[in-house]
Length: 377
Image 1 (cartoon, helix red, strand yellow):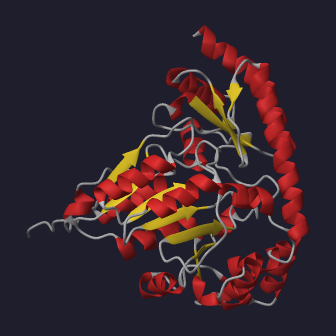
Image 2 (tube, helix red, strand yellow; image 1 turned 90 degrees about the horizontal axis):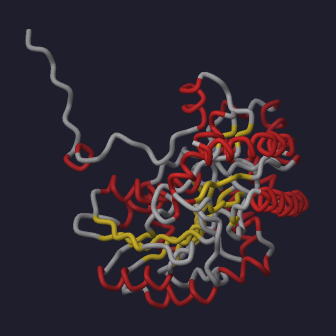
């Protein structure tokens, strides 16, 4: 009997590296044989979900709703989001987080011969999906630790790009571009090009500060798609739920290819309840602002330079990629999970997340020793 051969991957998949955008803290814990004492590397919310979200989920569980599929249209949640953002319901699509939405977007708009533009070292999930689509990506360097919107626009025009990706506030650096710079990028887009404006961290900003970095939502422009999430300021990373806002004809395309049962019922219920608790969001903003100050002060006490941040983490400049990598590895050994950018010149930084007060105390307790060991090695 002839042994069966495994099925062949498509040529695109066969040519991809066997990798994922992130190595999870759980994987690192298995490798080190012990849990982390402080999990501050995944940009998760230390504050958690709104109490109203907890109450809504508990009530749903008691009502035996966990056995039911989620509403494939997320109708109630989209209605609430539409009212919140001043748009129509058919200008919003809900899915299992921004990562999933980016995957669907690349399926919708990238085909053979197309080009996507992003920043070198930017949030890697977009590049992951672009590679999976088998199309060419053009990456432009950061400038002054910010995404270079002028260079993104120039590259989009030169390469006749179909998609341009920009996160503002930025991950992994935590910095922001100005509203004027983003508006100029939108004006510079070539015909038929779509800007993917990732605003995962914008809920950490109040309305005034948010409008200082990104223009108002304008769904009449079919060339801008904006992504939001409940993972960050709303504290629901484990629930996997986010949404995109855009022109109704662009949003309608998602209905052709998205997984209509990809968002679970409890996530929909919790997200809807969260929107009724702006007091919780205001508390989270205050806690994050205080957390950033603590991390920035910790860095400065040890002669390290923290970058300005509008997110729930602070990127700390260690001076070199080798020192940053050694500091990250040393913190891992000390039980502190952190991450760092992987591309020069961003890789000279280590990213410290805002954890609980207890997690900050653990970080503070070992930081001087770990940094000393790094510099003595």
